[in-house]
Image 1 (cartoon, rainbow, N blue to C red):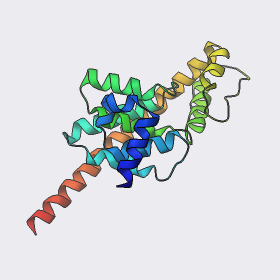
Image 2: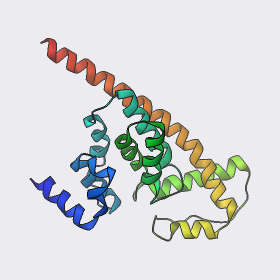
Image 3: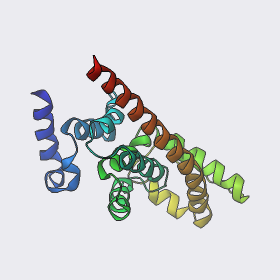
Image 4: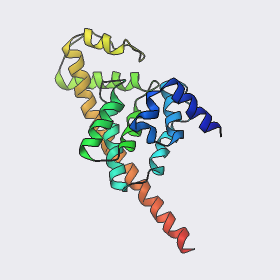
Length: 192
């Protein structure tokens, strides 16, 4: 009952949720995602577990989660879910899994991940800059990054692509392995 009340409160705070494709996600996942976005991280594992409640081909779910994991590493905070949702619709992978996968970067982890991506991009592209990324994500984060110049943003993108590819591969195979184990467990319990 409490989850239903929390969902209704989320709809009041985020009215666009009720009419969007995202509203088709499991209500608990939406509430948990909002908790992370609002900085009240209770149990982010619940969001990941939401992938296994999805009803679709496991390969499509794994590909959607991998896409979301890749997009989550891109330096576009605040737009990652929209981009992930759009691309997942175009390439026909599971949209809900793609939206869940984006949450590998959130208020708690984003600053650290983007700082690492920036460092990695600078090293790979051999860019010399004294710019320091903001220590926390905020609405002014992207404004600060854009005002620093193209070298900074290009470094973030290069690092994000590399960590995004790694994250996508790891996410894809973790979800595939988990679905296989779950399928075996289900078959064993059905045989008993």
